[in-house]
Amino acid sequence: MNYLILFLVALVPMITGFIWYGPIFGNAWMKQMGFTKESLKGTNMVKTLIISYILGLFIAFALVQMVIHQMGVFSTLAGDPGFNEQTGEAFTYFQDFLTNYGDRFRTFQHGAFHGVLYGFFLVMPILTVQALFEKKSFKYIAINAGYWMVTLAIMGGIVCQWL
Image 1 (spheres, rainbow, N blue to C red):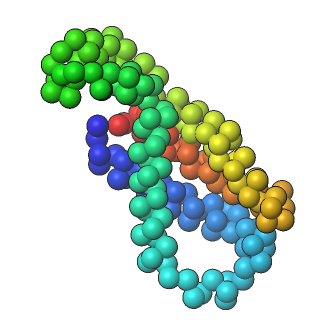
Image 2 (tube, rainbow, N blue to C red):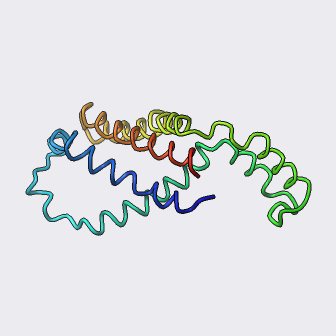
């Protein structure tokens, strides 16, 4: 596993957010939130960015399991005797499996597809339920769910292709 890629992928939500909630949907999002540029001035951006980066790492690590299908086989076999010591029948099977199937579905497009699916089938419903109880508009839901679908697509693509 290339941990450097995970640390870089954790930056994607901040970069995407800078663009999404800036020039693309910044004014519409601020209107939906009832914010003004003046009301946002007191924000501690260093704290916000550090916490956002840490949470981006959590998302990046979760995406490994979600977009790399070979991780399912690894998870199934990892508890077998000798596997962690790189000995035994399960470890040999896993090495053979990776030799034959290790590159299957390991493209940016495939990871991006899974990212969009998780955005649509997991994040969007969660945001929608929360927004309904907060009496937010459809526009609010669309802006935020769209951000996460795009962000997860980019993150998933990078993880799947280069991890």
